[in-house]
Length: 248
Length: 260
Ligand SMILES: Nc1ncnc2c1ncn2[C@@H]1O[C@H](COP(=O)(O)OP(=O)(O)OP(=O)(O)O)[C@@H](O)[C@H]1O
Ligand SMILES: [Mg+2]
Image 1: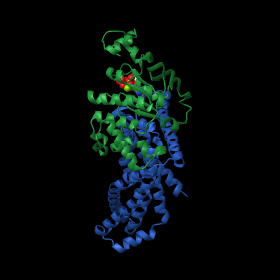
Image 2 (image 1 turned 180 degrees about the vertical axis):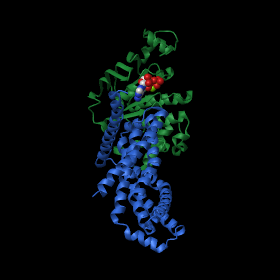
Image 3 (image 1 turned 30 degrees about the horizontal axis):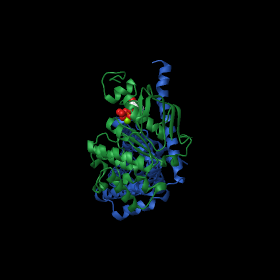
Image 4 (image 1 turned 60 degrees about the vertical axis):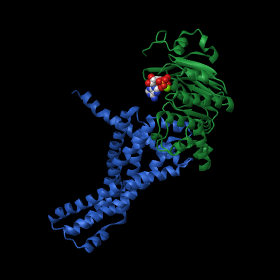
């Protein structure tokens, strides 16, 4: 279980997180929604320790993330970065199998390659793509390679930062189904950021809305449509008028 | 300008310089501490040896060749003023192996390697590849910095050694073809007056300069700020810092090695 309690983070004068509190139960899929620039990506990076919060605590399974032994802690996580963050010096398959080629999860090269190709297939990429370099792929293809890398070592907890942005509707459907499958069948815990409301409905058990640096609303996806929360209503219906200002 | 202002104008860059040296030292200590803590990445080190050592050979070789030739002409012209043209072979050799080989070699490597390391790591930083490395349980210090430091520290002395030989050959070529030296006499003079320590001290300098180049490249890459502008600034700073530190280290090492 992941628990954020009163997390604050500023970059200079820019106060991004101002007391974010959130719980994610094991084996569930939570989707974070919220306007562009509200700090969703920063929140995920805080949990992973890539960004250090100014204040507040973050616990995974009851252990403070700053106290946990780093390697063992990170070995439980997979992360899809918003920009893909593929290593451009390595071919696609070595990106996907990065974890399987070194460190504690190391296995023979041929086996790692086989796993990589299987994961690529699951994100809708042909085996021929395995030997290309990331710069030779389209934006959406890079995103999917990043997704394959995040799930390659079958981690317990997976973060997806905008997994379907830049994908065509069919491919977005494939990815939504994949994320759902990873949670339901493999029992993984997923935390997904998305702007795509059809994705929210396809992936989420629970929804959390980040606004003004705090979690404004959180609840099961079924309650999202009649929450009575004006912020959430405006957001999910994409209205220009409402409590959330259009210029931020 | 008031005296206080003048003092501040001197103090600010001094403090900035000291802070930079401090930050570089801490960075270096952190990187080197990974030398004894697994996991290690020998493959990465090998790749960097090729990148830094092998691929720098043409630049360093050409620099040495032309420098050796020019040195022979200058020493001949200077020596002829007190009819000491015979010193050309030995002074070319000593000047090359003690000073010009390591310093010019180091500077060429700084231009070629510090910039490319800073740009590569800086780009990785701004595109979140460094963050991605961390989430994949790989320490960027171990995976990126240490292999480059090891490779540069090992490769630059070898480059300097090769450069020394090419530089002396350049001097010999000019000596024989332009200055009418006897080829055999030139070579005999070179060998007779050159001492082992002349060469070895230059190789040690090369190792120090290689370390400095990789350190500056990695440091500015890792601390690069966001965007293309950040990477550009990191690249420029890496080359400038590496070059200035090479000159400073060269003076200190020369004092240490040769002052009586
Ligand atoms: N490393 C950083 N240094 C300075 N500011 C940062 C940094 N990372 C994020 N920010 C700032 O924090 C704010 C939130 O950024 P974040 O990337 O979390 O937004 P987001 O909610 O993910 O938006 P989007 O939906 O557009 O991806 C932005 O104003 C951004 O400028
Ligand atoms: Mg984001």
